[in-house]
Length: 263
Length: 245
Ligand SMILES: Nc1ncnc2c1ncn2[C@@H]1O[C@H](COP(=O)(O)OP(=O)(O)OP(=O)(O)O)[C@@H](O)[C@H]1O
Ligand SMILES: [Mg+2]
Image (cartoon, rainbow over all chains, first blue to last red; front, side, top):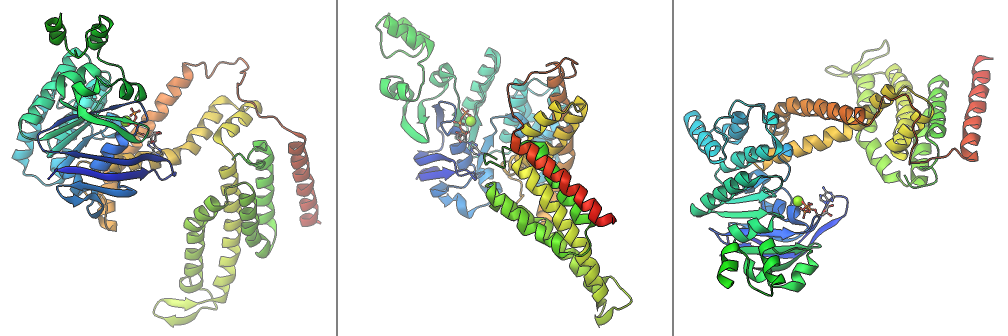
């Protein structure tokens, strides 16, 4: 059985705006899935439903076989960690060390264990030298890693990253890829929302395309980038290499190596 | 806000609110004052904000009124207080006194609430600028008005952030208090920071420049606005004459 499942979910915000309509998807443990789609497609809404921050207006969200409606957000969040799209919505401690430790401290985890876990998470996110820094003294791109570390440290079964690639330079994007690979290697699931198609082709095997409140396509990445109709409807572009290859009439190419092989 | 009343010039509505408050405070008795509530409720329905007005009134002013009544009638001691049980007394004086206080609160609060629900901040700023208010004063007034919804949003965001880290925020009063108190610091800090950034952004767009501004947004005073303002003035003078002579 799938660890995380959305069954025919609708969701409307309190102002009556319907953000999701008849959405279903399921995730097994150990997967890396990219959610892609235009601004306003409902990506953030869908992941907030998985994490219990929002509860469906219709249909069910099942986490580990239990519907989120019967659980408090804090219970769901212990299994499904969510890193906010905007780190400033999430950070509220005055040093990075405290910020990362906050959740553990509140859960009354033993002090020495907190220290070890925080240090490990900080190292993973390249923040080991910034533990005493005020979060707002770091640039936006690195603040995002602070929030990733604070989610990692809680050790959730599923980790959701909302647009982690936005505004990141090449080394940071690589660091992000390493983090995702590391989490996957420990048998967990990573769900990432991103607009970076190069990142999608490199790091993920499965993709979910969303457009206008719906799931348009849920398939291996290679298949998504072969489907002209879906790409057009979701206003998505292929990775640059694939665009280049196509202009030479070569199809089915997503990475540099594939292009070299095809030529 | 898109109603005919919503589109009136802010100062017309403001004159009217001011008049309603002055009349409520200086007229003896309490029936006129209590009548202000149904009157503004009616106005709110005409402005398309009826339910919003009603809900806001019930959840804030009505509560205060009830508490004042209970305290004045049953707890505060007056010469005519009759003991009922323990520290509870019944007093006719207390009843009269609370009618006097609460009727004025109901009237003023109804007027002010109605005003802020049917006037957009944009219109208010525009009117203040056109009336040559000092720019800093305009900024202070606007930041204050926008503070409340801002605080609410910010508080909700921080709550969400806590929940998504597995921290309990739902439940009884005690749990809510335990999560709310530690977040006050960051909340106020981030509000100050936001206001500072807001001020910087305005500075960088020549906010304090003494040149006369042009505005893309236009809101004109129509004949009806002049009519309302003059009418308010006449009513005000008539009220003065009635109260003084
Ligand atoms: N709190 C809210 N109240 C009302 N409507 C909202 C709220 N949050 C989002 N929406 C609306 O719901 C729709 C979907 O929003 P969502 O944030 O899920 O989009 P998204 O796919 O994450 O977009 P982006 O790529 O810009 O982050 C949008 O049209 C948005 O305007
Ligand atoms: Mg989003």
